[in-house]
Image (tube, rainbow, N blue to C red; front, side, top):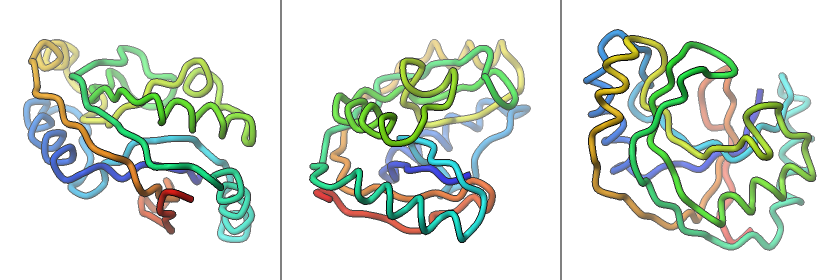
Length: 169
């Protein structure tokens, strides 16, 4: 599965990694693997990737950089896919929502997690002790703001970036 993601600044990745240490029984992301999903694109092989990338780049034409902000720690108590709970850093961004909505007109939204169900976030951890997750959610954090001026194509099977695109596209 390929997706279009936002690479997060090192301050966001460091915060997610630091907070994950407080959830020792949960599955956490390795350093350098934190991203912010914009839209799942589909596909499952290199031949399909080239088509998806070209279609996405065409849809991105004219997309300007936009602001994003980490606002707090939240929980998906029941994730539509994978282990629960999911503890994450909540993201506010009008530009991100607008881009996601636009891409949902090009690529079908994934039920329950895209379209109206889209909740931009950076995952801290999945699974583990729900009480520890709730305790972490109660913690206040300082907001982190940044300008998104790059997007990356992500291969979820290989857990790696395939290519990128600078904004404005």
